Image 1 (spheres, one colour):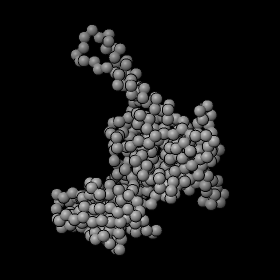
Image 2: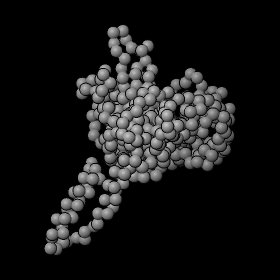
Image 3: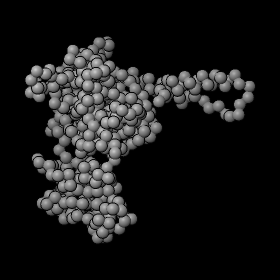
Image 4: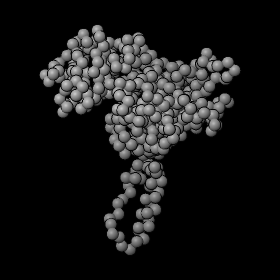
Amino acid sequence: MGWKWFGGGITGAMLACALGTAASAEARTPSKLWMEAQNRAISRQHSNISEVARKAMPAVVSITTRQDLAEVAPGEEPQRGIGSGFIIHPDGYILTSAHVVDGASEVTISIRSANGYVEEFPATVVGEDERTDCALLKVDAPRKLPVLKLASASHVGIADWVVVIGNPFGLAHSVTVGVVSYVGRTDVTPNGRDGDFDYLQMDASINPGNSGGPVLDLHGDVVAVANAVNVSGQGIGFAIPIDIAKTVIPQLKTHGRMRRGWMGISVQDFSPEVAQAFNLNPRGKGVVVTDVVEDGPAARAGLRTGDVILNMDRLSVERAHTLRWQVAARGVGQRVRLHLRRLGRPMTLKVKLEDLPPVESPPSTLASGGTPGEQTAGARSVLEELLSPVPRTQSSRSGGIPKADEGLGAP
């Protein structure tokens, strides 16, 4: 069983129909042992889902890629890939997953026009970031393009309905609906890779070709980007919160990559085992500094192994993953104020963040927080070992819908 990146329940309509039938049957019953609820909320929700899908369709695109010829073995033909994306600016900027366009020498965008026919445009990869799996593309269209608005995943809760639109198996503009199963899933990573993942888990169906497509709330706004699923499981899909993409997009446009802030420390979540190892109060909280890079920004600021970071710039820090992302998102050259405890005493230190060194240090000395790679094997979630990437769906050599035996789900 393997978790896959995809290059890439009962629906509201079925539920409304079922409840409507039940209501009709009850109307013929002479007496009841309960009070019958009205179905207005269900009907309204069904109406919202249909409206969301209809309005979002023009801004959702299909992405076709062609493998770089330099990477093709002698005697083999270049692979073609299929993915999804969505327009975020009328001038032709498109957001998708980085693994959809990774290694591609040609990227083509298919857009459905207002008249219903499909237009194709060559796309340029403006920038991509592997750690958040985000990529920004650009097409030059002869007109302003329809866009989707970006909201925030912070307003999404468990059991909220979401709508996913994408290009599974080359079937453009396919719509699936589901509910959010979990928010803030950090114990899964694609193929055990280190990255800034904070997944939104959902049961909406996503398949090869869905990656990079939008996950919409019932207002029709984007709250996440479809990203990964387990091909041997059912109803367990993952999407990257749009808040992460909104932090990365400006840097992709300006620099072609994300310039992460780097502090030069390694931290772990506070736990009884970590507390014992560093002789700390087992009832404490915060994140524990387990390593400090020699002559790094944190070392020069006076941070030491065993310090417990409580907050950064008055933002509470309770998870290593949270601190890592906050530092990375703050950017190069920014100064942060750390509030910490050392040997039980409160302290405040200021650290000026730097760019990540060209050659990354081993995981134990990476900047700004604990990563799955820094945890012990026993502490790692089994899901982390199962999640593996599918860079994009391999299409048939004719460019059509892939056949069932053409390696779907293969890494």
